[in-house]
Amino acid sequence: MVPCDAGRVRLLVIEDETRLALALQRGLVAEGFVVDVRHDGPSGLQEARFGGYDAVVLDIMLPGMSGYDVVRTLRAEQVWVPVLMLSAKDGEYDQADGLDYGADDYLTKPFSFVVLLARLRALLRRGATAREPVLTVGDIELDPALREVRRAGEPVALSPRELTLLEYLLRHRDRVVGKVELLDHVWDSAQDVDPNAVEVYVGYLRRKLGRDAIRTVRGAGYTVRR
Amino acid sequence: MVPCDAGRVRLLVIEDETRLALALQRGLVAEGFVVDVRHDGPSGLQEARFGGYDAVVLDIMLPGMSGYDVVRTLRAEQVWVPVLMLSAKDGEYDQADGLDYGADDYLTKPFSFVVLLARLRALLRRGATAREPVLTVGDIELDPALREVRRAGEPVALSPRELTLLEYLLRHRDRVVGKVELLDHVWDSAQDVDPNAVEVYVGYLRRKLGRDAIRTVRGAGYTVRR
DNA sequence: TCAGGTTCTCAGCGGGTTCACAGCGACCCC
DNA sequence: GGGGTCGCTGTGAACCCGCTGAGAACCTGA
Image (tube, rainbow over all chains, first blue to last red; front, side):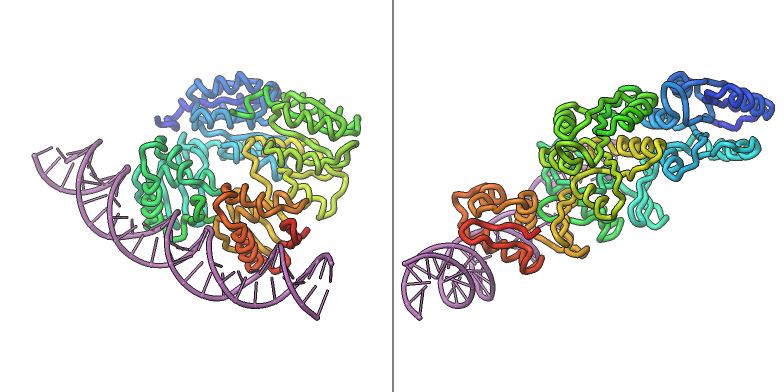
């Protein structure tokens, strides 16, 4: 999909304040976008899910369902449309939360229309490749959407099994993960695979990512170093 | 389970000041949560135990039983529901205590409702996988999830048996633990192991954690010093 | 069909871990 | 103070766990 096909870019605005919603719609239409508006969380979510928009402008305070929950639901359903969040709050927590939930950018009310336009264009340029947050630990990054791993910025080639194993370890980096658990979730057949396979694959990962990327906790399992 | 499935998230508020309790309930209901309220420690504990809530907002000063005791009891009973504690105090110690006992986050009165909401959402996002609390006594900390032990902040390497033994002692720090009991629970075979093994391992722990980390109660067993 | 990559088993090695043993020291009671 | 009990610790041997290289089976795309 080419999102910036001129004059055909479709936007969804989810905003309950009718005055603001109308102003946004007018302004954006004047800029050549096709704009749909929804006024509450649930119907906005529904529309964002199936509307095939190139980007969504999303207020946080919404009737029925907060903007946070809308993005989070979308991302959980693997919908990666770019989302620009709007909020009257400006606390640290709120911003962090919005981005954590999977929003791509964040704007605090009141904002100038020009700024909104600039950010929106930046998002559209980046394209619909908005993606699951990259898992990071130390100098190792794993992009779940691209299934790509980098070490100190340099790409590292991993086999599917290696990548799945690393992903599981990164997603549970706050605790020790046992070998049987890994067999369950990474091999999905704890029965007929030798636990030694886990050791072998940890060995492969260490060879590619550095000796101390994965720590052995003898008698318990493995953890990624923090 | 998806805890934030909009409109179905169930919260329990344990707060004895009726005005505050009512305000919280109203605010949270307006945000789409299902909210139950209890006004004292014991009934709150009972409800938290069996109510199947997605999170608990818990005051510290409560009639009948302190908030500290409520979390501690819940965690001791392996109930891992996320707990957000509220307190009028703001001393460093109180905060540390609350988190030590197994609370997941901490808010000092007076707080803004927006902040409470943000923290609560953060907790719900983390999900019911709230981490097991770190066991602490003196300058010794044991993180059961990471299987990691620190003394005065410095990591200490323990073998699996050593760690299991220390964990059992810490989990029963309020009483003397007999050697046979330790053989039962740490060695899970009280029959064919010499009770002297316990003495040996206590010796190992003392060597690594300090001579007086574990106190001998002659004729009865061992306790960790408090 | 062949080449290259991936998955996983196998077996051996090395070192940490577990625990019995035995001698010694500490404590308690008479 | 003396004897007995209980707990502590150094030594050492068997054991277990995790690591690794080699290689077989398998899959996949050219």
